[in-house]
Picture 1 (cartoon, rainbow, N blue to C red):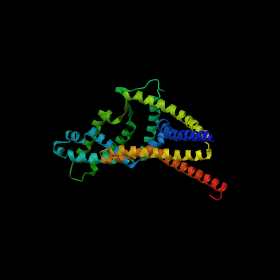
Picture 2: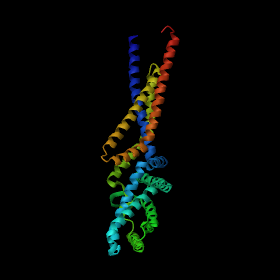
Picture 3: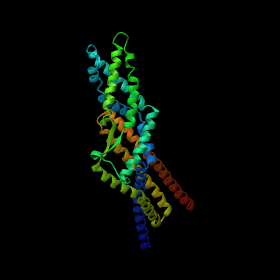
Picture 4: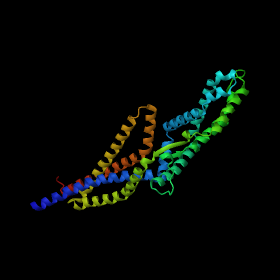
Length: 337
């Protein structure tokens, strides 16, 4: 009897150890599968990007960055001072302020419009497909000009400029009668637009660097590893889980333990993700940028966190159900307990 009890104890110890490993592997499987789908599945990425790109904090930040870039490129005050007659040159600052305010308002309206949402989704779909092809080395010829992979923002900037320039010519109408010569104002504004259009769109506001080429090899290697993990981890998890149940002297009890351990492991992953995101957000010094970063992370990790919560609840309920069933069986077999 002592030998048999010792064997049962060893079997239980091994099965418990396997159960712990299986719970950790299950969590790794869930996180890796979700990460793989979001990063490498274009439909999932576009859906996630759609949520992120329409967050109010993100829209305000994009509008501010874009309008500032356009204002800097337009350089309205200096161009107006050169184009206005000498008698109106002192007013170049006032007019430039009105032009910049107009650009900011039009830019914000654009980012709040359905046109932006449509362009944003199309850009992400096209850009993501291209990025995945680059990462997986599926494109015969990949352009990494100046050692960096870039995204062309011309489809977003051009509609804003068209919107601004189509209405900017009417700026003179906002000047009170008799204050200024509207003809001179209209000609100066037209001159600013013509000079800007002649220069073309500066590359600095139409391209965004995604990542440099010295990181590309590491990203490609990481993608290859993740591609393998999403297939290896589920199989390994099932094997370890099956071993834990097979070796357990009491399989019903082991099933309950597995559910409880899985719930705890998934809960730990949920807490870890929130702690990491919190650390990243708290490390951002600017309050406005911190709100943007927080909104971006909410959009990206929100789906994973919701999935983890659902699985934790299901695991916890399953564990409680198995514990209740075990108690019922014990009371049924021995009503006096």
